Image (cartoon, rainbow, N blue to C red; front, side):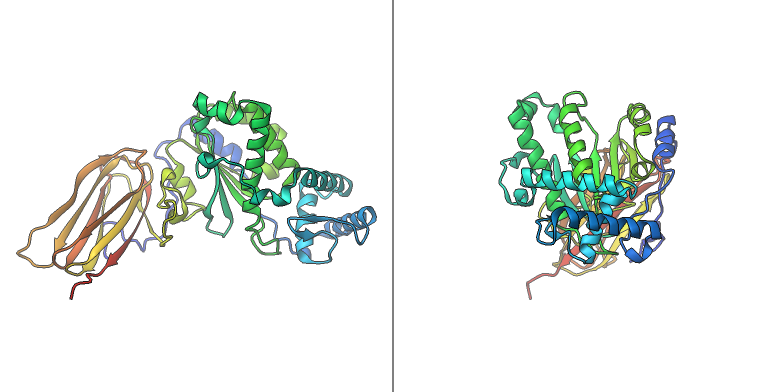
Length: 408
């Protein structure tokens, strides 16, 4: 496809902000020093001491529960000599640095909690939080490596009425916690529990407008439940729309986190969600509110990615459109703050160019554009993004579908 200003075939860049603030530099240094390397769960990759720990944990389970004891987790019999059981046991061992006794105690407590909480059946319950679905916590698509992605956004709770409806008393809080566990359990049901497979999820947490003080109790309980009962279930924690004071909070709780946990963190300040998420998730799988192309109940047609350099204008030319055909397109540029327009250029030299969308400035918070145009004659559609007034490089994506005329 012709694109004289920025060919789509150019290798994808990893854009950075034009000028990093001190806070950004501090957060990057703190969180991205050692990129997380996910466990493969192949027992052949284990050290001799780790293999020994795995066997000792199995022996302790057998001694405690017996060959006929009920000892299952996520539908996997932990006493079975198979690779799925090994994956689960290795998660508990990894969470406790292969200290067998600590891992065993953690596992026993988790089994007891799952039985009391009835975690195996929570995924099928109707807990009545329709207004929170797709807003507060929800599974949505996969990352580039195939991990299911869970999005979290608690900004809606700055509304006092909403907060009271959900967290007004202990009974409501417990019901919310059950719903939040339900979302996680549904995500875990998508995992393979297989060596070399997809054995963890991605967490994306939007910190925009999050009421810190009001959600402290709920946040602490959620964090405690996750840490105690879902070890090594998250491959990467991506924080977006991070406020300036996060660096202060990080300096306070950072020392209490293991290097392994901190290596999973990716931190992105406000206005840079798209360029951060695109590094891990394809644009067609990123929700529109975060600079992607994915809308609820939408077709997941692959998108083409490109970058718009600072001071550059990019024209995307979609050619070969026949008379009577309808073209539908999606286009997004992360952190827009530039000018966009669309025009149809007929093939006939004596025809006039048609302004489908007049040039207009798009705000940084603008969601992806979706529009359509039915041509009366053959030609091409030209989508233009003009970033000449900015020095910041921006990530972008587009896709389109052409429907031919049904008329003979």
